[in-house]
Length: 411
Figure 1 (cartoon, rainbow, N blue to C red):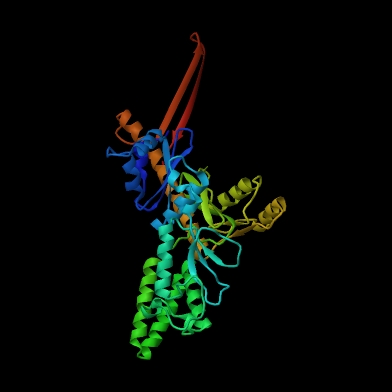
Figure 2: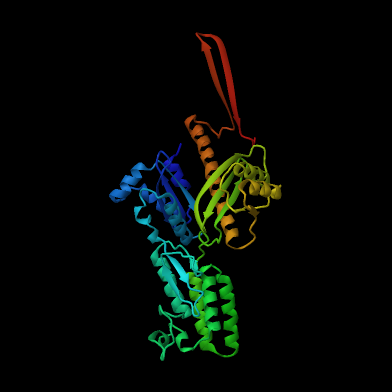
């Protein structure tokens, strides 16, 4: 049974997404939080609430949450889950217009960067969807200011440079003041920034700064230094929507002495759309590898519409055999991968982290039951062995008894 007070105590002081559900397990509301513990508690406090929130809270039977690394990830994940589940109380976020993209027309001689609501198959590069128009606009403004690419919608050669050149917001390709090669270097850096490859950009900028300083070109070096600082500030990772795969499952695992938890994140069209979790009794001291192998076989063998890739935290036994079996069944190539770096590895770490938190909370729940028994029965110490008897008879005759024993394995 869901104990609201106890579950509120378990909430982590980390960023993430919370999901409110009614007694029929329907999703009422999906929200994001910088600190989950503080945000979710607000709904159940006595502070003034709007009529909409009051009605929603009255329908809440239980809630769940997904922990992320930062608020940016929580924001993207929130929008993905809302778009997928269309919760009743998220009406303002249901429209597709909430999800703008950033487009780079890479086929142009001097590409431009701008916002768009449509993702077309026109050879351009698209990034997003972004959680809201403000976030996308802020990124576009930052790119145009720091990389000094053209601002005009229709590019053409001019007889004189426009105002943006004179206030150092454009490199004036229309006047031939920058070559296509140099301009495209700027575009390459912008693409790396939008793909989250900021470390590579910063390393390149550091090399350029050192080179300029050695040449005593201090003004140019200072400009690059400011650019580097600005990139570091704005380039928070958004791995929830940066995985460039059409359909993958990401699996995390955590174990303790009592149980094992496996968490699956579903990524479709580069967006995380949901998750599932499964628990296994660890009374036989199973290894993570044994559990993963058995789970993969049982979970995917009868599942239809399999993803093209399944990301695992570690290599499993008989992986080639399982790949072939699933590929033949689904009539397409299905691969199991163990990421070693990049966004996919960080997504594995996110799945592992959520599995651990879920398992820790479940263990605490068992401990709280034992504490309640101790308090109710006024015991001196925690019970380590519990014997329960059930005796039945028919009119005082044919008496039958049964005993069930629960014992702490640490004793």
